Amino acid sequence: MAWDLPTLLGLAVAFSVVMYVVMDGFDLGVGILFIRAPSDNDRDVMMSSIAPFWDGNETWLVLGGTLLIAAFPVAYATLLPAFYVPLITMLFALIFRGIAFEFRFQARRFRWLWDLAFSGGSTLAGFCQGLVLGGFIDGIQVESGAFSGSTFDFASAFAIVCGLGLVAGYALLGSTWLVFRTEGTTAAYARAAAPIALLATLAFILAVSIWTPLTHSQIAQRWFSWPNIGFLSPVPLLTALVAYGIWRAVGEAREARPFVLSIVLFLLAFLGPLWHDPVAGRIVGCHARFRGGRNGRDRADHIGLSKLCALDFSRQNEPGRGLRALMNITKCGRSRNSEPGGLYGTGPRP
Image (tube, rainbow, N blue to C red; front, top):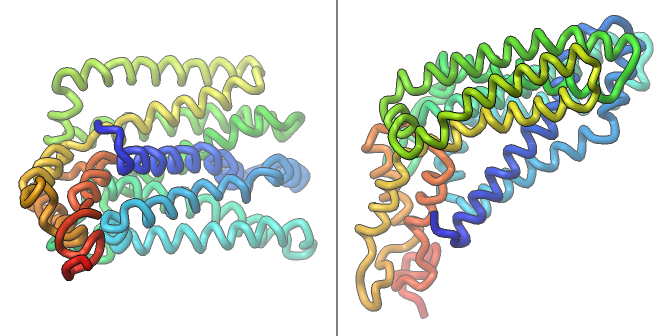
């Protein structure tokens, strides 16, 4: 991987997404567990535990989206139409959740309604994020550099499983956060919920880990070829050790350790999606095939090259849409010094 500007910006996008999932994940998890709390007083404690953090945590989502549209506009324009429905639903769920967060403190007669809104918005937002992740791994249809599928292509069985898995993972983060930050009956409720959320999360991780290589031969080839298998082979063992550590730490009342280990478990779970990018090499090849001209400069404008690369990308009919693939789509079209009109132009440069 060349350490140029697109690479660094791509890593910044990935870092923002991971930080959002971890940081906003625990307060979404608290919302998922919210409606099942033993009493209204426990719900007050749960909401107070995330009150100083929840709105700041969502800043990572804004940062990731802004970086994506600014640094990778072609990838953004290709991917966004494929996930309009889950993304818009997620945003409305987050807005509704934020309104419920503020109104619940003032409500008396209809507080139960805002409890449902807060818990439902948290659950729906987490599920939609999982749908996007599953659809991203599954792949999207691209023709002539634009999304060519239907509105609900994202709603595959695999994406639904990813959505449910992310809800379970957020519940794990939320329960371990409550173990860390609360006490009394609220902490007891969190200690009871954490093992259930842990088992559900592990079940979904196992299902996705088996499902992905079985249905996508290119991903299986990449995961199990040398030297990739050497890097990835310790991940299942590390996942099992971390899960056992969470189980033991929750039972032994070690407040901070379950939450920290839950974050580590999430990071391990994200290694697979970040690793499966088997089409990156072909896209780099596309970049190489279109180089030429005087002084070795690119002879096509940014949009044209990116569309050709996206077309070549779709013709391979390969599912991996990983980080390097997105970066290389954009790198295929970089040509500030190109003859036909700079970065976005179509006419000759003055």
